[in-house]
Image (cartoon, rainbow over all chains, first blue to last red; front, side, top):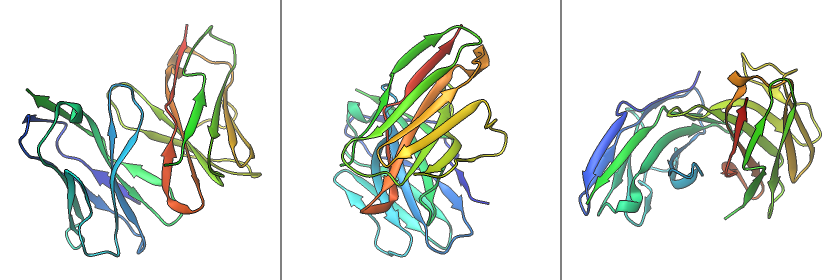
Length: 113
Length: 116
């Protein structure tokens, strides 16, 4: 069975600072993908960043980057230069070859001005 | 990016009635669609997976006779909540999966269902 664990229910960061959200996962699939989604108060799920498990290089999207440790089954998200608009729920998810997703319980990120 | 719409965005109904929620992929063909349920301050819970032209596969604990899913075309899937009760009140989100990317789901904006 696949599991995704986010151990931080809530996190807070000062505007312009850097914050790291943690995620660990477990999967029996050899070909899988990892995602971070943002869910603002509108509740629209927004893809922040994705990582193919077969790629060793950590994915980066502007201010967002991941630290993918395959052996440790760890997939953390780093947000640099945090902005007020980054405040939201962040969900880590693991995806299999069939496209199905398993979500973690989420981390609520607050950004202080 | 690919766009998925849902209609309605918010619906209120009386207990015992049925409600239909539509999920449309606007600019891609969704060979697979997923339906999720999300309670306040909780994560997304997968309810069912549907492939175009096939019967949906329901997750354990989800009543298939209560939550009817139809995926009749590559751009439309519907979720019908039959004989709705207050405990069915929740936020329902659909997502689509299709070419060229078979590994990334595109999410609709969700539908808030309130059963009185």
